[in-house]
Amino acid sequence: MRRPGRDDAPDRLYTLTGGRSRSGPDSPFDLVTLVVAESDATPGMQSEHAAILRLAQAPTAVVEVAAELGLPVSITKILLSDLLATGRVSARHPRNSVLPDPDILEQVLVGLRNL
Image 1 (cartoon, rainbow, N blue to C red):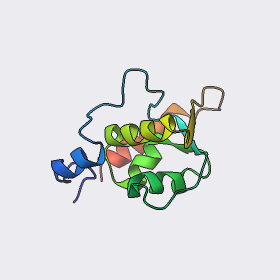
Image 2 (cartoon, helix red, strand yellow):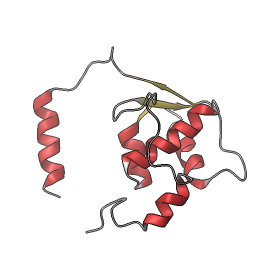
Image 3 (tube, rainbow, N blue to C red):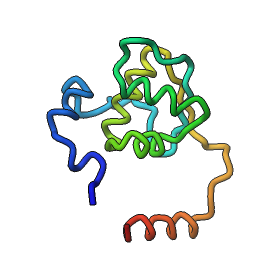
């Protein structure tokens, strides 16, 4: 079974991020941060950036973006930081949102590990 990000050539991931390995200490992104596109993709834009903008037309969690792109979360955070710096996305933490039941989250985690 192919595992996203783990089987990718390291040079591809290096190229996607311009050699960066972290999104920065002041990055607002964690797994549940909601990302919303503030603009549409433009011609000539990096394909992953364009894909993020299409995915984030509605509020989308960072972990969902990473899963849809098939990239590690760390790489996705770097790409999101690029878009945030240019004002193409906004980010907010769902602190005031109703959180799912921890038992359900545990069951999902167990199910994912069993895949």
